[in-house]
Amino acid sequence: MPEILTLVNFYYSKLHFYQTTAEKEKVYHVNPKRAQRLAHKATQKKAIGTKAQQALKKQFEQSKIAKKKVKKDRKREEQERRFLQKKSNVEKNTVVIDVEKARN
Image 1 (spheres, one colour):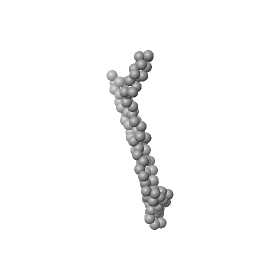
Image 2 (cartoon, helix red, strand yellow):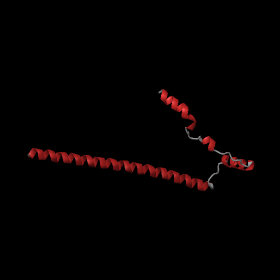
Image 3 (cartoon, helix red, strand yellow):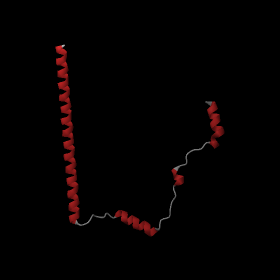
Image 4 (cartoon, helix red, strand yellow):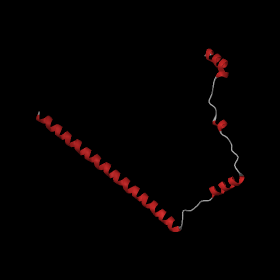
């Protein structure tokens, strides 16, 4: 342990550490008018089109959610059907094996 401490003390000035990202960040001057425009633009929430367009968008989103739910249900039912089919195939195979053992 003392050897390590002496090596670190002796070669500490030669050790290279990673530079922090704070040193690499540069601060650019932004024109005050541009900053004001950007701030105003960020605070304003722009509505999409007319009321009719908004209604169509809302209807589309609702139909998308409904389709997603139907797809999820169909997928779950298909997985259950496959599981039951595999389970019945395994049971048939075990019955066949038991009958063959009984014959011998």
